[in-house]
Image 1: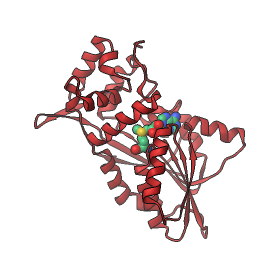
Image 2: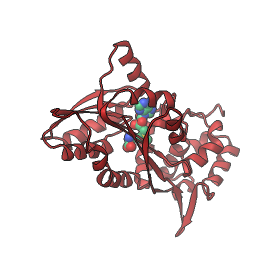
Image 3: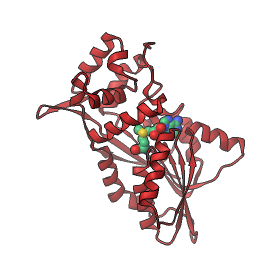
Image 4: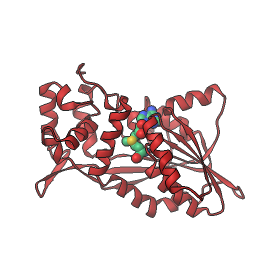
Length: 288
Ligand SMILES: C[S@@+](CC[C@H](N)C(=O)[O-])C[C@H]1O[C@@H](n2cnc3c(N)ncnc32)[C@H](O)[C@@H]1O
């Protein structure tokens, strides 16, 4: 571990800015929206109690809510006439503010109510256990957030236990053979971050959960990471390494090795003069 570095994900404001750049430079949200349009309707077709009048939805690590709102819209379309109660668990207050603004903009007139929990999934679990509460949900999702939890198996076990009969748990994660996993396998122990890139299907197998898996191909243009002083490039590099000011704060040998490896075929390909990072995604739908 290199001591002069600081984890980006522990700095709410800087993390948000870098995440924004990562979203702009990749087609991740477009890929997820296509999955929500084409595949999610089949997944959610049979959620909910027979004759029930509402659906309970739980989003963990929802960020600024763009993907959550798409999911909620699809659930509403699939189950017209049912009201939706949506709980959000998100530790970053800046993300919650953005999510609330999006709700104002896009959800007026929809039969959806929100409960905001500004906390981590671990705190949510702890709080529920203290209150002896185990409210059940028809649909739970964890979109691109499991990297940050203290224990992936414990998180999956706990939130799976909150599924209602017929409920589904959706997890998305960068693919095991993608650029993030290669980068973090090689350098993770030298970054200060507690982020981990787990093979989630392997964890689901180990805890004996039944799931379907969907692979989505996704790219991220990281060309600007190689232009020293380029603001977007620096933010993207910080996001990829989960480090505040990686170029400045990482020891020179680590910085050079990372910049070199980011161009390696294990992480990226070169196309029309651009460096395109493999951001492939893996979606898992876990059954009740
Ligand atoms: C990569 S972002 C994904 C945001 C959103 N789901 C999306 O796909 O656009 C990861 C999110 O997980 C949140 N997060 C980090 N640690 C968490 C934890 N322990 N429990 C719940 N959420 C967490 C972060 O604040 C961030 O908003």
